[in-house]
Length: 318
Image 1 (cartoon, rainbow, N blue to C red):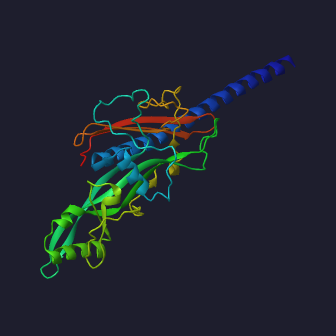
Image 2: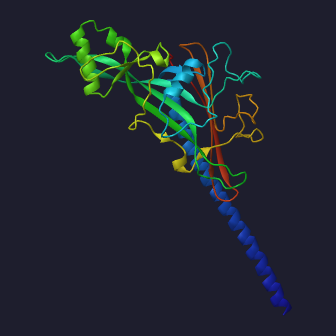
Image 3: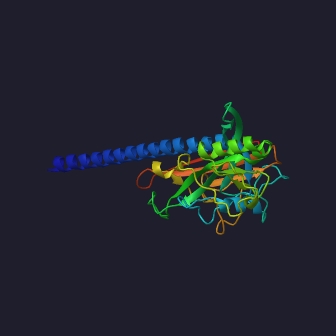
């Protein structure tokens, strides 16, 4: 009987050891899988944004002009979080954390990219064309959702990162440079009827004076559209970039090495970037756009994979 008791005891100890080892192995596998998934997704999005911003032609900051353009975007399909803000462009100071009580860092980004030029027909009789530059607005911002990816406390709803792209707009100055009325009407009509572009855009004007309507007959309005709604291009917008891969923006936590904010000095109880920080410095023509993205993904109970990445873009600003 004594030998049986000892044997059973030893077997029990071995089973417990093996169970603990197996559970530790499974936990390690879940953690590695979560880290792999979040790193892959985070790095991909970070470098996609770097390429986009590097090829931008105009950046908007958190001033009156930038805020007016942001308000004109049709973001109804993926609403922006109320706490999102554009960065204030700092043309004086170098790239460094914000001074206390002087916030410049934001968590949304609005810029314009050049699309492929349109070869619009200027003379139907000869087939002569005019290449007109086209532009597209791009907005990157956080969106609140009702999903809960990470169930460890504190449980919060997930936030996705949206990449929104507008329809195309033709270069207004290039249309005005066409002095022949018939040629200008032909170009405008071709832009509307063949390319689906019904507005020109003047990058030097505020939003209520920058867009001019064209119609299918080639008439270019002499007065700007004062209540402009910048439509989303459903074929070009990629929408949410994280949530479909079970990845979300990580909420800011100053006590956590990965989740802490780097540039903002705001009181975190008042405003926090919550996974996406943007700062813009430098004068027009030599701006630098600093972007910091922190994402996370669940790996099972008690396991969360976190990845933080930082890139600096150097776009050519109009």
